[in-house]
Image (cartoon, rainbow, N blue to C red; front, side, top):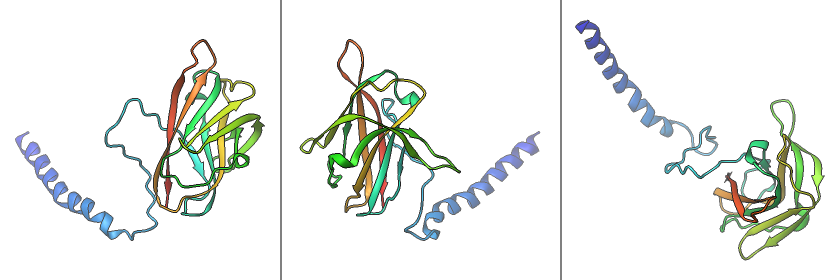
Length: 189
């Protein structure tokens, strides 16, 4: 038994000698530029942060882009009367009311594309000073099994980086307060 334990510690030392230098040198071996990360790390994990899904057609700087900000069924707990959408302060892109819409969406996958099934009529107010959008659907967005999306046709900003968008929703009911729905973290190359 003592021999097996000694063997395991010897194997773990060999593993450390081979694996850690390889792990540290791997980023230097990969050519920079087109590295796509499959994981997202958040150092200070906040229990109140909710990551929402999105789809960006083009992530290059200054490119014409169409972004779907998804509100899936489990992202909405109540019927929504209002959606407040805050943009990052440094997201320098011109917003036009005609290029923003709310729609019922079919989220694509491997064989299908993401597309709007039905446009939801809504009033959209753009506040340039606060960098916020207020979306008022004519009828409340039901908390059913349908997925909805805020679709923006914009030009990407000049600077590359990570941009975090936040959304708040006003639920139908007695309390007219805005509740946090979640955040989207978008990468511009």
